[in-house]
Amino acid sequence: MPRKIIIDTDPGQDDALALLLALASPDELDILGIVAVAGNVPLHHTLNNARKILELSGRSDVKLFAGSDRPLRQVLVTAEHVHGETGLDGPDLPDPTYPVQTQSGVDFIIETLRTIDDVTLVTLGPLTDVAKAFQQAPDVVSRVREVVMMLGAWRELGNVTPTAEFNAYVDPDAVDIVLNSGAPLTLLPLDATHKVLSTQDRLQVLRDMGNTAGPQAAIMLKASERFDIQKFGWAGAPLHDPCTIAYLLKPDLFTGRAVNVSVETQSTLTLGMTVVDWFKATDRPANVNFIHDAEAVGFYNLLFERLRRLP
View (cartoon, rainbow, N blue to C red):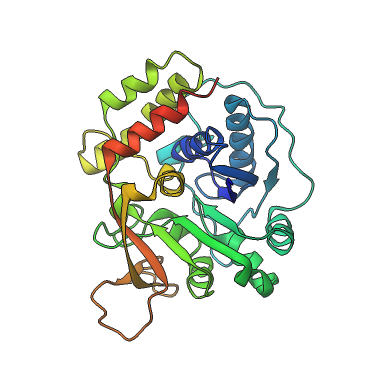
């Protein structure tokens, strides 16, 4: 049976690739719904971008919901300097007509968890919607199969501040709620995602696919790679968010360890820092399956094989 998932996302070019990978894998993943949240860009852009990606995928059966337009407590921080003004700069995709459900994304998450067993939450952006769902309906926490998150860092430190990864920095209070919820958690941090670089050879594979989705994906990644290549000096930009979907499809591509992870919610210097107790320096119990390594060749082989299935 396909694994039942809800994807919470803030597209973003790498979010777009994660959505396409999931949408191209219906035999393994039953997408109950997609919720757009404010993060990389404000909510009206992330919602519009999710509509564009759903239309690009050729899937018309997946429900789309609007999530939160701001973090729990912080002022919204966005990343137009990486993703462009719209969050999906690069491809020339048509204005979408894909419908958005009237139910709020948070209410959808709560209702789904209460009525359907064994649901996995996949988060590609800030954790605001999941934290709200857990706060408003504590009974749903025990019904979650797993929360799989692209978030945080340990040895890779930060990509938006010296100590914080972007998704954790945008809403650290939401991260704190989820980390302490008691739900089964898997974290795909920068330590893993920095291992899967979209080199020029790999972008060329996308360009040469012969369908619409592959070349458009290459254009997306080319538009957003400038920031990472300039910042880190690498041969390509990492593909962060698709690692969550690849983990669900082929977990053997990843290596993890059960550790305790906490997040800083108060300090102006280290706000959003994920503190990983790798060597059990404290008596805090392990609360996260912390993925610290990824096998890049297998990851891209999977990505290419699935994107070839799309229109």
